[in-house]
Length: 184
Image 1 (spheres, helix red, strand yellow):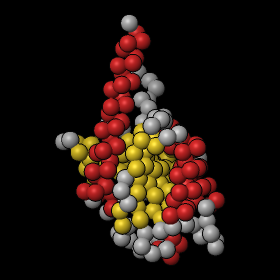
Image 2: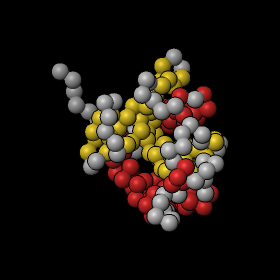
Image 3: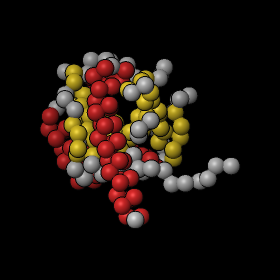
Image 4: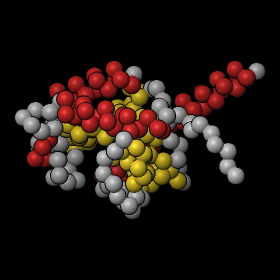
């Protein structure tokens, strides 16, 4: 029988799709107030994988990702997704969103995205939120699953998540060193 234990803290990662810089900057302000300092911000990548968001968010969409210095617990994800959805609504203009905010978390083994939509590969977390294991870390890099969104399969995104994972790995190493020093 396995022993029930508390999960390790995880790395909060948030992806954005937008065309309007002002909504992105307002979102960053609100999220750093909620979760503290960022420790990573990716380059802006043109988002041309689908036209699904164009009607609402506009043309010439950009994708970027950030991560935060402070770690979270995995069971914080539903609360964070609900906060992200509320922020999208707060930043809306003319009855539509200006920005898409996608929170998830990263561990040494995987990247998990939050969703409000159920599907065969998603697990219900509570409060109307599902988790999707989007990427798995194997053979020194993140790899997609058969259900992984096309943009998350690109080398540009994989490189971003590998960079964030390196930051997280150092944080976990420092955490272990501090715990061992405190035990002596």
